[in-house]
Length: 183
Image 1 (spheres, helix red, strand yellow):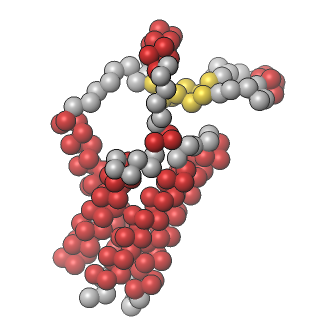
Image 2 (cartoon, helix red, strand yellow):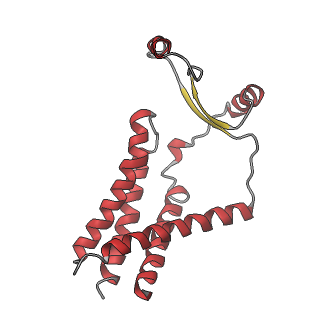
Image 3 (cartoon, helix red, strand yellow):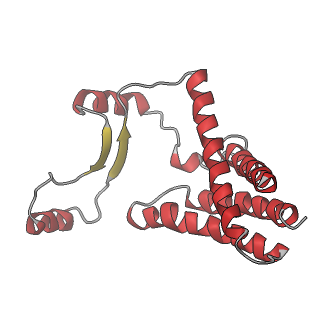
């Protein structure tokens, strides 16, 4: 049990470190949160027109619109611009909030690796390559489930960054677990 807990803590830490580097120093996700010099104008319009926090797909039809009317609307929008907005009515950034979010992220990473270790320990005598490939497969499952499937419907500007993230972070975790769990 001690070996599994150490494996999960170090593996989770490796994933967390890669995530931190990816979003900060390496800035791989910049395309999904780019700057526009028109941000003040855009925010003024959003603040004046949106009543509540939420996710908005623009343009869209109201809830309850018939399928026939929704299809007509979709056809009329072909080739026209659209936007996906995540609107929050109060910017809340503090050091304590940042620390709590990072702690939650690290805890989730450790829990993910702990669950993977449980699966890996069910294999009678896993080889280094089996452990490494299993970790990479888990990363690819995560990638396919969220970033890639979301990108099918709503184009993401950092899809390649997400792929790099899963290959790098779960690859590092796999190298660690392949060495540690076989000791």
